[in-house]
Amino acid sequence: MTEDMPAEIADIDGTRLLRRLRDRVEGRLFALAEYDTERLNLLYLGDAAREMYPSEEVMSDHFETIHSYVHVDFAEIELFTDELFPSAERVEYVVTGMDFLTIIRVYCDGVGIFLSVSPDEPVVPLVEAVRAELGSD
Image (cartoon, rainbow, N blue to C red; front, side, top):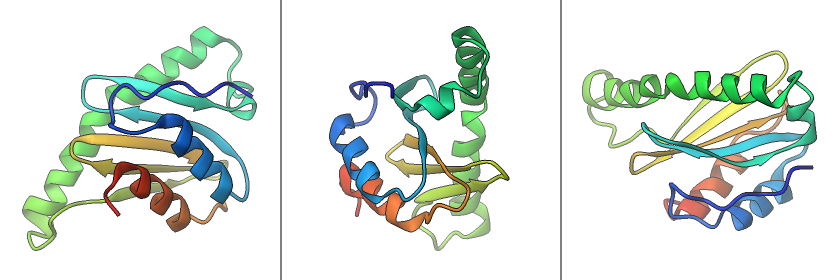
């Protein structure tokens, strides 16, 4: 298991957030990261996530590719709050379910928290754990 790394972008205690998530996750927690439009900081990467890649270089390139699309997340937030649902004050989280994992992105004040978990993982308890750490619950 990869050691947890300190938070650099969000005003959170990354170790405490990781502990909160581990207490609630029922399956696997593959990865945890914080990001904004300019930066990506990996907070945790489990062995199962590392095993998905043939090398550290391939893994790092993939993470950079994912982050290069982060503007879509923030544009989508604006679309939902400004155009589609103007009565909504904010988008709190987005979930992408795939056959092999679920990706959860939780937002607060221009910062995103990314986590990937087992595909059948209950989402709301994990979102609540992240929001509690962000102080937005």
